[in-house]
Image 1 (cartoon, helix red, strand yellow):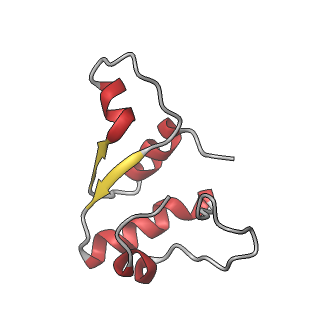
Image 2 (cartoon, one colour):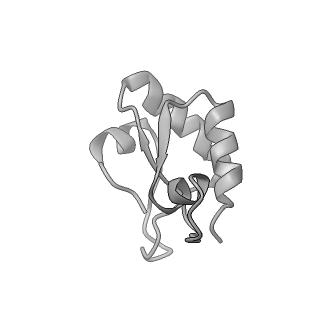
Image 3 (cartoon, helix red, strand yellow):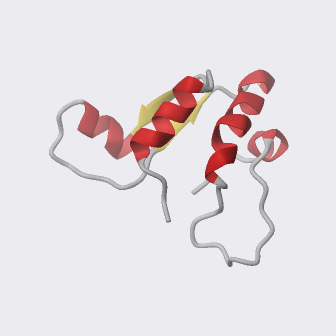
Amino acid sequence: MAADPGRLIDALVAGGVEFVVIGGVALVLHGSARTTGDLDVCYSRSAHNLATLEHALAPFSPTLRGAPSDLPFRLDAATLRAGLTFS
């Protein structure tokens, strides 16, 4: 089950993650009638911020959307550094 975008934003802010909200949630925050169930963010790729992002998201036990449930996946700073887009 996907996490509530508001809870994710709260966790990122509380964790001190450097990020901006983009996509559908950004449109809603600017008054659009469009609705969305996911949260798209663009985050700083500094080593410190990747570690901060890892810790902020850990309580949500992130997985890859659409991937087989038995596919090993660990969202950590090394994974974040190696990838550019995660669903």
